[in-house]
Image (cartoon, rainbow, N blue to C red; front, side, top):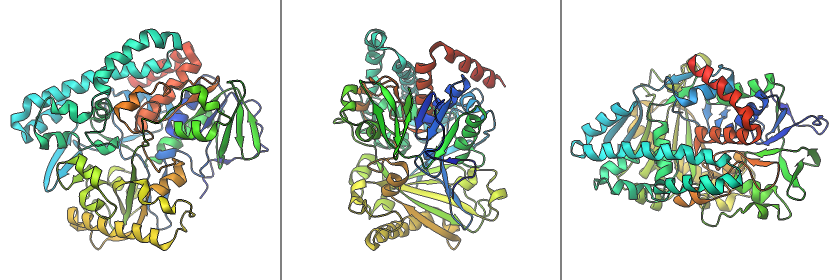
Length: 533
């Protein structure tokens, strides 16, 4: 159902005083919009879906259950964590977080469990307890994470440089980071250990960036693992609160988010933005921020060869993986069923590359499952949804497995497609019953989403959840920057920086820096003051 706080787009709305149009209401676009609005700019966010928030939104069913679609936990929210002030800025300090506890992730390979504990030293000691002969390798690994991430911060900030500075100082920044970006995770880890099980455990969270060790850039691995090193946190009230509280801030600042506003084209003339088309309505503006992915922006929203001026070329980088998810609603509470707060990454064996390379839809639940318990993480769940609990169980899914049904309407696809989902549901339920036998007999509702569901709602053409693959080649794409060669057109979202909420927020910050320039320091000052509080 349409949320009463969000206005539907109408061609009768007066957009004459708009400074910036943001396409897409994912957290990258919302971050850019909020920073700009904080500095007195009038911003309009146009969202094609009837619910804003991108991958931060949740969906509900009549039985009283609701599930997240993308955010299962966020890191760097410990005391003094870099994300805390950022979220307080976006939400006017109305967004509150629940720590997941000492253990935030568990890697399970077969029947062997490995706990990831919050805090670097806790993590170190726990890993050494599992692998007492690999203490040096574990120490080397932690040092590599820190070195890579230190250079990564400079790499992403360089994306705000003007061309003359990017070609000079920026060239050295990129060069020094290539040591980490241009090696795969497996190549780096193989240099410090030959222990196959240790490598598998250290890479057990690879689903957070979507690539197995022999394909992922170590730089991407390091950034994601470092992000969660001090533990995981969950937004009280569910992941949808991230977008809802940010939109409240935007509205208080005089800007607005419009739903059912499907932008069909970015209008340009002589390498300059002129406005956007929503249906038959032309909205003129001087600045457009696209947060819907570089593929959608350059291949679908820019016409008449405009994208050719931007050096856009994706021949060396594929879209990230898709996923298939079983949503489970239970008729008892998380406490009654003894469900954990931590996430579980379950693998049948320790060759993760083989698992991801050779997985089929039929055996996906027998090879890999990521299991999250949103009702356990959220302290407000029981108040809003008494006597119930929820689980999400996810596995990898290739878009090609479902491509033959892509032109069929959502929720009305043929029986063969529905049977594929039904078979996955049966297999994943059996996996859940094996891992958590206490839930058997308490499943009240189930639903399955496929990459076609992702395409329908997020408009990613191949049902990908992480934008572009996080391969070494991705870090060499020069056009993945906030500013394009079309004046007034900027890019936000995880494609520009890195996967996830933190990556998308970073992209929005970088966009704001390119527009506000020195005025952005008032935002950093406000963040600093919020951090102190």
